[in-house]
Image (cartoon, rainbow, N blue to C red; front, side, top):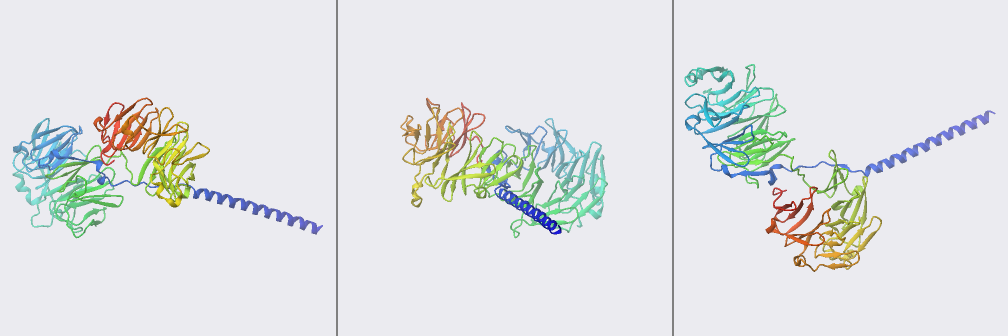
Length: 634
């Protein structure tokens, strides 16, 4: 009886052990399967934006100001741009220019600064002090007469106007005028200024440690916390708070003359100098740090510094420097963009554009916005899928998907060919890729996160990206790229391949066409193949004989069929042709096309037809052609 019980217990233990091993094996298999599926999943992708400075389409120059003695600029409440010149203020409303001449007896002959107040008044800082321009009239603000060299103007957060002058820091409010001045200058300055001015002696301990302790304020900048930073003409920096607390910074950095100060959103203080300087200086609230950018053996002149709303720090002088996310970029005036070459000054416009002017030169506008156009380095847009995702081919031969939130990349590890060149989404929402894999033409269909690839070993070395088309009946057509016959070791037969949803059919070069530069379809169902134009009715192919005769004697480099059934053909020499199933219509340079050499055709959701030519992109709204429909460089 005891032996039987022991045997039964052993069997129970053995059964539970086997059951445990079985569960373990099942879990292991599940983990392997999950791991395999993860290996096939797309990987995160980080898009790169090019340096906007080197995108030519973002730039516009304004030669109207050349030779006018340009010195400063601002923007008024109505969006007009105001340019201070030797002759007066030029106002530009985006279309027209108008000059408002100076009253030299009131304003002077050397304008240094412009500031537009919240009430719309325009203040001018010049060799004669501060004047105001309002309702077409000039008014002397300070001093009432005589000369008072004013270098900089700033409207503070509290609405007061600060001015950096040769005799100190001037503050104008509704209650009156205050001048922060060196104590030893107070007596002499009282004779020059009005009795209505309140004088505040700046402590000697915070003034520059030189025999002449005059408080010459060259630059004024306000920090987010309301502190005012003064840059002395000779390079010393003084921080002033509302509690009348001063702090001088000197000796901690390599100083120069003519400082420019910028306090960024993170409360860091940046300082550059307009005379010989090697470094760009940053104060984090505790210590200073000097950055030497580029060739440290050279001396540079930095005359302006500003932080744009996207967080980029811009520094200008005899070259342009930008800093964002820890990356420094340098551009010299010799680059292929309209950069001024002398003493750059910046202004950020209400629309986010950066205006750059060179003193005595002209002005240029750099469009930094992404509201109209977005550019990505190394990505070529292909199509949108029904879920709203955008699809691209990347420079590293991958396929990239962006769903509005995340970027993902597919590669050979996901079943994709090693060299994709074209993506197409079918009317049923299926995404296909075409290109080459291991030097053989290949297609691939996306199934979830896995690509199912088909190699077409007898077709060609690759599929021409222009010759991928879904016919009216849903059949997909892919054509061989030109010169397939040069690959003797592959036994290619050229032609086209077609997929009807179930089976693949290869039509070698003698069946329809040896290769194609494009595929489309006319409203009667006839297929058209580019290169030397051929049409195919489903049974027999025919070389096109015209009319129009221009299509007989030229190469067709682009074919497009609109959703309405119109067939568009782009020729290499004679422009673009539209066929509505009955009549042909030709459009060329004389009709408004940018050039007669056509490279691509596309119709947008609004029905407009876009034609890419050798001289830019043209747009056709059904009645009129608009050449250069996009800025050059896009």
